[in-house]
Each structure stands twice: as structure tokens, then as C-alpha cells.
Length: 262
Image 1 (cartoon, rainbow, N blue to C red):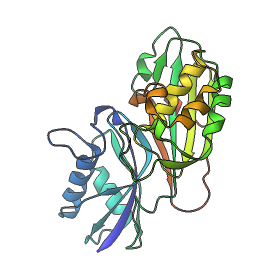
Image 2: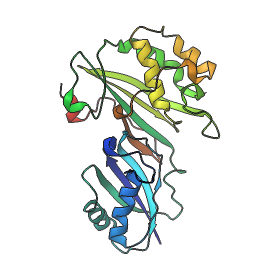
Image 3: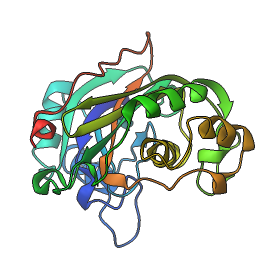
Image 4: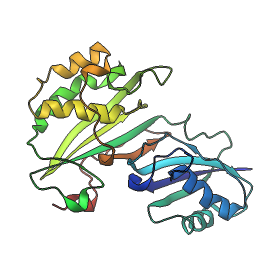
């Protein structure tokens, strides 16, 4: 049996998340159905991490085992031919038998997009959280600094405890702005359930002037989700990249062409 690693992108708008759910359209079921049509095998994809309903991915990673003899490049083309327009495999490769897309992941990079302004961006509604108020990005950046490093992030975890440990190491966190578009790039060795969206909702309260910058550090120390801000909506969140070796490389200035439109 071969172990195949896939890197895929998907628009999460019309999916009920990654994981298979009875009677609902999910990325996992869609992908596994497409693979089965090509390999004539029942396969189960192992994913780097589940994404929620409405959350997008540019660099999601999965692996699966198969007995097919199709070369990886032909396998990629054949599976893509059986996928709907909102999912695409960007890369397919043979990997060692022991490779596990979830357990071998060393880090992940997420990005969250916010659009500010009085007028809602009709063509970006699937990919940004529209905010009609002014946000002070410099304050949000300064308030973010205590989150860098290794901490217990249970204040930013929905339904704690849902993992064995709430301790994670954030290695990169930076806010950027270009015109009406604001985005957060955040990388860590792992993320808790709704962690990024809770961090965004908390820092938004700082950017709006509701909370002082020091409040974020206090919330982190308190380890109480009730003290943090709201969970930001899913459509602004993108899984950008998953690392398995080497050092993380993040291009904070990179934006999607469609998201530069006003």
C-alpha cells in the first residue's frame, strides 16, 4: 500500500466543515468520494486538522493509503476531475508509510480577514468579516504581543477542555492593513477549538476602543473564556499552510487578488 499526501484548497462556504456528518455536505466526504471513484477503493483521509463550517483552506494537508499504481501526478488530475469547483488538490506526492498528516504537523499558519467601512463588500462577503467601525490596528498589534510564546490558551478555547492540554506556542502574530482590508497572520505549533476566532474577537474590542491594550494579557492569565471577546465569524478564516519540516515562512504582505477589491 502506498501512502499519498495531498495538499488541497477549498472554499468552506457551502461545507459543514471538514469532518463527515450524516446528511450534511463536508469536505472529507467530498474528497473521499472523489478518491474512491479513481482508485475503486474505500479510503479514509487523515487530515492535519479539522476546519469548521464556513472556514476556508489554501494549504490543507491529508494523507491516505491506496493500492493504486497511478503515478502521483495522474492521481492528482484524476481526483480533481471528480471534485466540485469549490475543492481542488494542489499537490499529490508519495510519502513514507509512517507519515501522518495530523501527528507529524509541526506548525500551522492561519489568516483572518476583516473589511472595514460603511458599505458592505458584496463580492467579498464569503471571505471577510465586515466591520462598519474604525479599528486601530496599531493598538491591536501592541495588545497582541503578550500572546506570543508558550502559554495556556484556555481563555481562547471554546468548550474547554476539548484537548488533553490547552498549552500552545504562538510563534508569529502580526496585523496588517491595506486600504479597507485588515488581516491577522498567526502561526503556532497547534491551535485549540475556535482559538484564532476568539483571539480576533478579543482584539477587535481593543481596536474599537472598548478595552485597553493591557486587557488582553489579563484575559490570557485569567484562563477563563467568559472574559475574552466574542468568537469571530468563520468566513474570514483561512488555513494557509501546514509545516512538517523546516522553519515557518510567512509572507504577511501576500493577499489574494480578489480580496484587494474594494
